[in-house]
Length: 129
Image 1 (cartoon, rainbow, N blue to C red):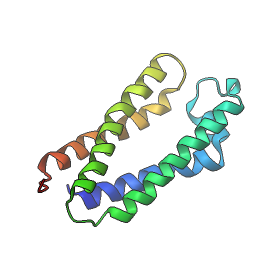
Image 2: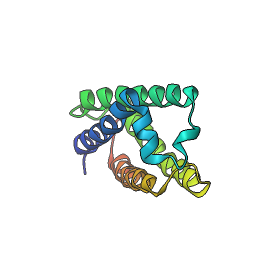
Image 3: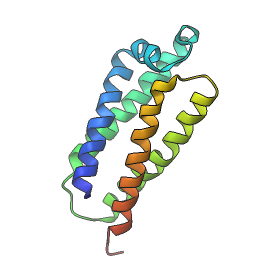
Image 4: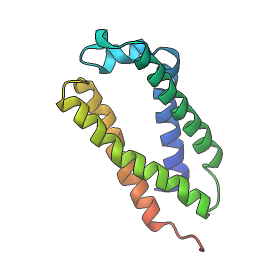
């Protein structure tokens, strides 16, 4: 469990969601939304925006995956940890309120795994302050 493996796995996972969200948001909506027919133009803009953010994260993580420990690397690791702690909460809320279907449980599982993994790596990372 090191930063290189975490960043590589997270980058691959992020790009697998980023590309469909940017290029084919309607397909993603049909996969995860309970009622995709209620989506409108604002939905597609938000999905493409979130997809582009995930793509930027992919580029960042791929670029720094072999970086030496530093405060900046710890900051990126903290970003992943906080994001992956919040992600399952958001999707569980959406599932329970009928916005997303049970397929979104996969996103919840990925978020939990990455939150635990990044938390463990963050805990053992030592950076001279």
